[in-house]
Length: 115
Length: 116
Image 1 (cartoon, helix red, strand yellow):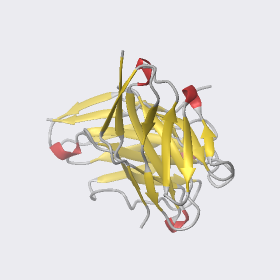
Image 2 (cartoon, rainbow over the protein chains, first blue to last red):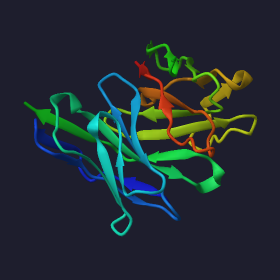
Image 3 (cartoon, rainbow over the protein chains, first blue to last red):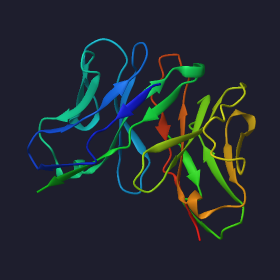
Image 4 (cartoon, rainbow over the protein chains, first blue to last red):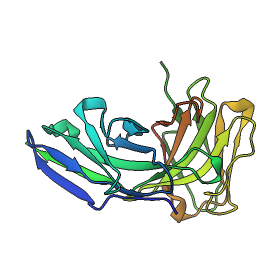
């Protein structure tokens, strides 16, 4: 069965420091991987995706993620965190079963960036 | 351009009442999804519509939940005889053309349902 794990419920980072939000996945075949961000009382916003090609993908708001096939990981990173990055982050993988384009989401990681 | 819209933004209802939640996807998007997000939880898939194909209802938690999509555009999620455990944020998302290089879903702001 396909699944996504976000091992950290919360990540705390000081403003200006680099941040990493972890994600590991389990799929059969080639994974299609996504990161979404959810600000308070808002819907989810797409950040970036990995479909094929370069393992390092760049997305919105200065975020990037590195696809690592051997470690089945797709960690989200940013070189210098901002207080405004504080939000809930979801990793997702495309569910190929049944031929439908569904996403399976991780449980989410709350990022808190402190001044 | 206009994004996915949902109404109402908040809904408080008494246990046992029926509720209808509405989703307007981005114009021209052929696929539409409903998810449920409970407090402190991730997103739970409910139902998926793609063009004229039969919807994938595999995520609906009980027969009290149903959804329809009229004219390939607007969708309504109906919950009958609401229970307190139905309290959650219900999110709608759409994709332009799944499988045609379009994989990212665009989400609406959600409807926060509270069952008292």
